[in-house]
Image (cartoon, rainbow, N blue to C red; front, side):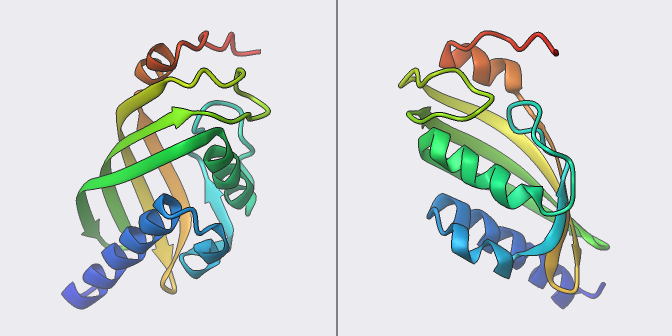
Length: 145
């Protein structure tokens, strides 16, 4: 990709994160392909199949009354954008795989790798400090079953 395309790819990711921060779920198809594959198991156990990301992000927004994803760095190369994020929120809602709301806040660092094609996110991978998040929220560590 040329520099303009890399800039455009970073803009797609930046706008996607802004839509999540603003809770504009209806805008997500502007940034994510309908068959996007999200390997980011935000908590644990979310489906790893085309299109499941839309429901996964909605569930995360439902679980956290305030959720903010602050891009600290965006790095683009080829068809990928890497985002280093500070993610913070307060657990105020329910989620099928989360404990009842604790009303506690968390702040962790995450690294997300976005693959883009035709101007949309087609794949998401992430690494996050889940242990730190669980400890801050007062959650038990999942037993993996």
